[in-house]
Length: 369
Image (cartoon, rainbow, N blue to C red):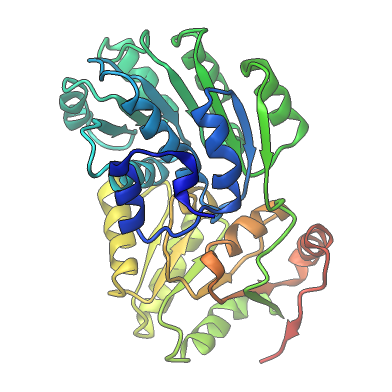
C-alpha cells in the first residue's frame, strides 16, 4: 500500500515522497478517502500516528480541484501555538510544490506580523481559538467563504477551557461545510460535542489511547520527591542518552528542575505556558539540534513537540490523568523505532500509577537504583 492509491496530484505525491513517506499509516489510509470524498469525520487517534498528514494531505488535494479564492477556505483550530506551528510546517512540507497560502496565528506574541500575513489572504489558516476570535472581532478575518473546518486535539482544547471560544467560532463559519474532528480520547462530553457539530460523520479509530507502543521499554522507580532530582542526574550520567524529554506537573517545577540540572553541568531548558513564544521555539530548536540534552516540559506545552529521534522520556512526576501518561510516552518509540520511558513514583503518586497500569493493562516493571 502506498500513496498512489489516493489519486493525489503529482506535486503532492512528489512532496510526500521527499518527506520520506513510503506507505500511509493506519489513520492516513482510513481517513484520507473520507476527507477526499467530502465527508464529515470523527478521527480518534493518539499522538505519533500520523494524524496531521491524515487531514493535511487530502485538504491540499481538495484545494487543487478548484480555483484558489482570495479568502480563507480551510480553518484548523488547535489548542497550542507549538501545535499550530507544527501543523503549518506540515502543510508547507506536503504542499511545497503548490501555491497554497498558509498562515498560523496564536496568542502570546504581538499581532502585527499575523495581521500582515492575513492581508495576503491565506487559503489555509491554522489558529488557536483566543487569537482567532480577537482578530475576527477586530475585522481582520472573515470566515464566510470557509469550506473545511478541522478541530485538532479537540480533547485538549476542551480541557484547556476553549469550549466557549470554539462555540463562538462555530457561529462565524458557514453551516454548509466539511468538518473534521480529531481527538486523542473520546469521553462522553467530547463525543456529545462532536455529534452536535458534525453531519452524518464517518468514524475512524486507531490505536486506542489505552495502548502504548510495543517499541517503548517502560519502567518505574519508587522514589520520594526530594530524591527525584538526584535520581535523574544519576540516570543522565549515561552518555548514550543523547536527549531526554522530562515531564513535570507545574511550570514552577519545570524551571526549578532546569536550574538544578544546570548546577551539575547538564544543559537543559524548560518549555511551558509562561514562556514567551521566542523562548519556547528557541528551547525546542536547541533540543532538536542536540545543543541541550534535556527539555523539561509541562503537558500542555508538550502537545506541539514532534521529534523523530527522541529515545528517552522521563515522567519526573506522574500525571494525575492516566491517559496523559500514554500521550507523554508516545513522544518516544515513534514510527516503529525503539524508545525508553522511565517514571518516578513517590508515595503520594501510588494511586496515579495504579490508574495508569489499569488503563494500559499491565504492570510497569520496577527498577531499583
